[in-house]
Image 1 (cartoon, rainbow, N blue to C red):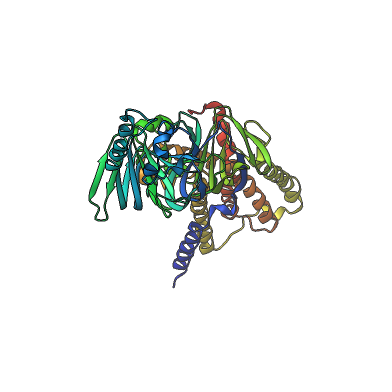
Image 2 (cartoon, rainbow, N blue to C red; image 1 turned 60 degrees about the vertical axis):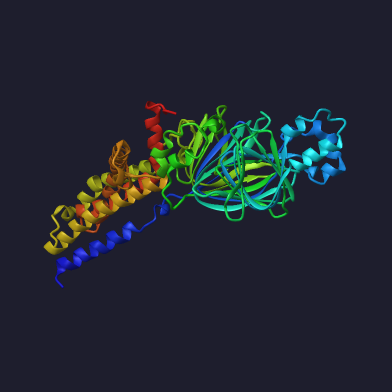
Amino acid sequence: MNHSLKIWMGCLLILSAVNTIDAQILSTSTYFQVNLDDDMMPISIGSLDVNGIIYGVEADSFINLSSYQDILDNPLIGNLFDTSILENPHAIPIIGDTYFDDVDKVTIIDLDLLNDLPDKDFISFDDIQRIIDNTTIFYNVDIQTEQCIFGTNGRGVKINQQYKYSLSSILSTSIIDNMETPMLAILAETPTHLRYLGDISAIVPLSDESLIKILDSNNIEVWNKTNSNIILLIEDDNLSFTEKPALLPISSPSNLTIIITPSVEDIDPTALLNQIPSQYLEDFHIPYYGILPKISSIINGALIIIDEEGGNIIISNTFQKYHSFSVIRSGDYTISIDEFSNKISGNGKLFFLGDHFYNSQAADDPHGIGLPYLAVILWIIAIVFLLLKHLILKQRIPHRDKTYHIDKKIKISLIILHIISIIATFILLDQEINYQLGMSLLSSLSNLSIITGAFAALQITIWAIGYISCSIPVAIIINFILYYLNFSNKHISKSIGIPFIWIFAALYTTMLLNIFLLFIPTPL
């Protein structure tokens, strides 16, 4: 095997190794924590793992049968209707496609029939007989609903599910009783599976547009009405159902643990957002949803916090203030909801605080801009070495000025090493940008757009500034050492200096972005 072939095989091995290096060698994640409050709206995008119990919203009026209490207290009627659900009524909204599987018993109460009674204080035998004759009961059926309320008697609803990818948010909505209530909204590619922990429940239409269908064991429709004046009482001690999208009340004493990580699947926010029924778009009021599809890879695994009043985030044990909104690119984080506190904690790769990026090099600066200490130190050392070389070494060791001749094959090898260093640094820089920002020049080439041009401009700028700030002084330092050893060669010094562009990018990319933001106001 000739010498040139060995060199090129070595080059390929080095480049292959570089391409597998994780950018996290230099960039590490940082712990963060933020306490949730009523004015805050966190939006999460990525893989989702939800585990816990919700109890719904206390709602005395979601099943309003108080005017029929005398009727329902009648022993004959009481045998038909188990009204224990009225003792501690709680409500969970059902806005999308919901499917109750294999329900033991369903009793349909027609409120119009009760309203037609001539005297609710005195019920004749004929009235009772008419109610009995017109009461419909089904056994072992499935129920399909849309735009309804699932009512409980205070028993919990359990969720334990993983989603490959989702868009979720904690928001306040007044769907139930026109009362602002915090809810966990889940838009995912798969339905949400829920299991009721009680034995008595109810389904109540939200409006005349509500849909309720009852299907038998052969999936044949046996009942269908859109009348809002009906109530379905369900008796089943092992009731489970699925809904898509899900809107889960998280008011106390709900207890939930929500873990979000970047999804390995391609995320299509548009398809997820289209799950929201048009009449409930205002209730979801997810801001900036129009741009979410364009930056899906950047926000994969991210936490977006919307808060008009702003707030504080604990980042690496320091309090950082954000303005209006914050974006945290994260490796993983957890939303914990219980009766004592609601908080989000995890590990973040990148923190945008509304008007600047958090930078550990300038954590106390309101604009996230500080002195690039690495570049300053390298240049101080380089200048000292230059002075030593020209003022001392050249006088004491004059033979060092003679040109050092090296073998032609070695010279070619050093040139190739220089080329490898440039290519490897470019790959590492691209991976570093991808790790921090979620997208880079190379990753955006598959879908050329203005974003590709933006990342090209950013990486060229980082390369140029990193070369001046770090690569040149490192090359000067290496040149001095080689000069002292009587082996001065520009290819060696530059080959060692070029990778410091990658180090510069890991430390100062966010600081450079903050400088840009001083002149370019954020569009959001």
